Length: 149
Image (cartoon, rainbow, N blue to C red; front, side):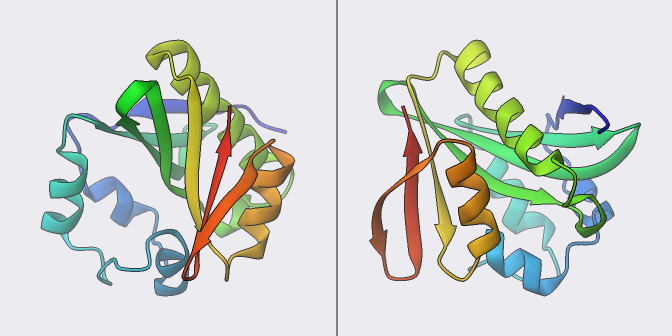
């Protein structure tokens, strides 16, 4: 298994998301209300907020994914827009990505709690998050809230 490298995407540059060649189906799984194809102004306005931090995920110098961390009150952090390219979704890289995201939130930001939202139509992600120790807290419509203390 190759090791992942995280790089902050700051100031936010949406061109990296385009480099990932995210399909419309995958985009809907990670952000159902997002426009397709990716629109610069939509993503730039989202990640330009002070509380949002975008991370690029590399394996052997190849851009293979992305995730974001969003600060909430009382040092609660939300993991958002978790994406790993389809050719890298086996072999434990998704688990490593989530582990690294949690470590960053806890050690660099002092997070007390981490949560995320996932679509019920994404059973593969739900299984991954459970494997990483997240538990379901509630569901609103098709969105499931999961957290890890």
